[in-house]
Image (cartoon, rainbow, N blue to C red; front, side):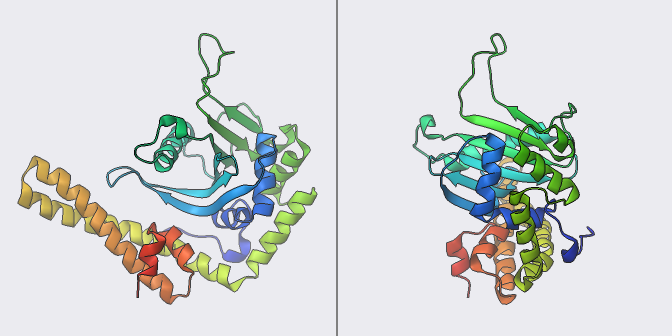
Length: 289
């Protein structure tokens, strides 16, 4: 049983609060622009807690904040508090999952737009005491030759905020670590944090969603396993196991997600947030009576 921080003690470094703050374009866009040191223009899509899964057997992911600008560039922004010593591999997987999700069947690979995976960490996963690490694919034999695949990965090490060259970024990273307001931007973020804390709707969402999501995942997987194994035995040894377990997991998870969505509707949560929390489509949530 995970011990969760009381709602009133949440800060920008807590995943729930970070997502709620970054849902506001007026706060998300300046963050992205200070990180990439460029004007990204208008934001065409902005959403938090997006569930992505390429198929029933693949590991699913839930993106903290997913953004698209008017040029089609996608940005995944993640808050990471604990060092699980797998960040490079995790960023690689997130990049692949986003590419698969965004490239529809029948489209050319050239249709893949630029994408950035951004992890804001409260530790230094690289160990070089830099506030900002930016990675792109280049030729090993001649490092002046970029691959130009449109993929970029960025790691922010908040603990090294004093090393940041950009004053605005330095102030933001300082705020993440200490809560100290030192710039106009961090003042606006701090005001939003305070606003969220006095919202009863946000308090209710924080209290309900995490537990419900974890229950849905655990129970859905267990139910899926039992359904899959039963069906697999009736089909046959090798093929039966493969097909049965895969389909059983998918069906079990979906049924549990529908049950979870119904419960959340009874708690008064919006259908949009329910879709994000359960991984169901908006149409599936709308169809629930």
